[in-house]
Length: 418
Image 1 (cartoon, rainbow, N blue to C red):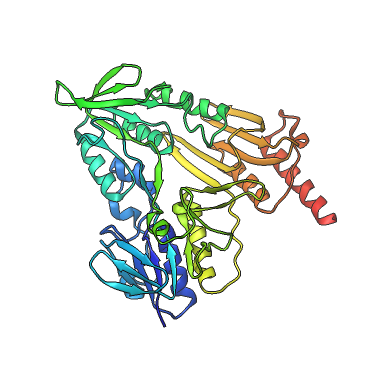
Image 2: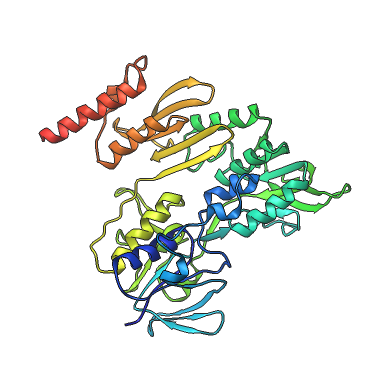
């Protein structure tokens, strides 16, 4: 029997391989490009970068033993070609490996800065463990940092660098940070948080070129002509899906590998999961890639079970978290503010809750700053499919937790009655 092969040893690949090994007796092969065993990415921009935890703290632990004892783990190796008609893959070391079922969990890579001088040695990215180690070494000797991009990676790096005592400037091309996924009112609170901590944020601003500085640093010139000399630059300008292997093999791709709710691609016996996979998340919406820690884990598990012939319907509820300074930010559901209305509770400077409602007044998502308990209640209700109406929250003078619990209880009772 040909092995079950997982290409990509990140969060999705790890959980897929672990699930396959737990639920079947077949040979499982996990192939990763990096020299490291599988690890989680969230600590890279936080504890690993700040030096409060070593790289090993991010490693995904294999239960009851070691990874190498349980599966065939191939590190520091690329898959250079997928030959679907022969059901085999060709590795960078020349080996040819057949497969019975194949999972592509190839993730993505940091988008490179496509301007003159963008490959300068003082320009850093943060996607891998090696990136984090290199950036940490650079930060230790730097006093000033320019972060290009006001998305999650950019803001987390900015927060970590500022907490380390660095002078930090963020350039973001849009009018607000995290604009693709975050309602404007919540994005403005992020701006307030960073500025209160001493981060300089400039919007409508992006890099045009990078050159050597006169004082040993690097000069970045903006598209409006502004020039800034800093010790170090971090480009957090997005992720590119690693879908080339699939595309070259004739698998349907569109800025990611297209999959259904069972993680199946357009080719039999080939599946995809994690940051590279693109599926319909909401039944009334387009296909999208869901770049999150939880989705990588849960879709990896779902894909493994689908590979084993188990009926799977994976419909993720988006959930994301980010630690910045002393704020734990969590998002659940749809929170981009497009065709949505909001209800907003401000408890103190860094503690707030925002509920998002669709055009007919149904609760579709929530944004929480240091309100994890309330966020969990919303997440639980949305996972259960409760349709909670905005009218249940009209009295904002009431305690939010009480309102949530009453709304959930009433909706649950109504659902049970029907």
